[in-house]
Image (cartoon, rainbow, N blue to C red; front, side, top):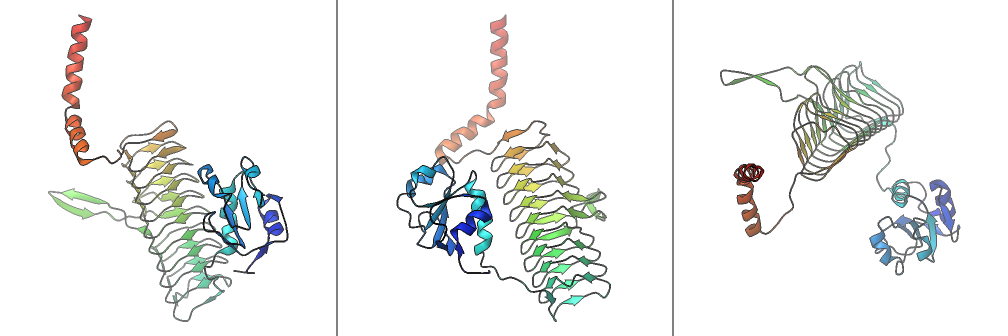
Length: 341
């Protein structure tokens, strides 16, 4: 973790923030406005929380110019306080820092190449012809399949699995239980029986990709499954074979993308969204939670299809009306014809 506290002036310089107050006060941690105690720094990014400014016990607050005058204490003024909080969080991250070296219980193929600065945890398996870059950390119990390439400064939490031929860029962060390069769901049917299709493509990740816990990314059937630079995948996301996801898109928990679908860059999908196979979604598409996409989306914007909860009585009434929509539409057309006549 480094030192246990930091001068506020040094933090301001690190964030490129305007400092209003005492640069010599010591900051020993992060907290919310409501829970902060002396020695902590808080942040205000949502204006609805401005009501807590007057009573916060935080030694300093990160806030935007629009609300800076509402706070008389030590302040770091930034256009994007939430980004400032994100950057500052790494100073106070209590996660253990791995040391370079290979644990004696790990199993590493003689043909694998592991950088001297990498950290290989207990009971890690690294198969033939794998290349592990500089500063890579592989958590305990992880398996790296044959011919994988792991870019510099990537971090694997414990129990990550990479099947064979997965290629990863630099600074990727893979959380526990994630499986990259598992076989895609490919079968041919003959007279009611399913015959497995060998999945011979790869999974290719760009730089700065994050893959959440227990997320699965299937390898391509023929071409590769491709995850662009800066993509963020939450926990329990499923990416099927031959999907491509453009740079800097973010998918929340339990999103499912069916095979061979192309997702553009800077897209944001809320939790439990589903996208059918063989579709194309353009850049900057935002799907609200539980949206189901069954056709191409060619224009950027916000799309929704899930309905909010209601009382069971009202939901049952609406369900009945939904089943009547086709007959109602036909009746409206008949009435329109009569009016035109």
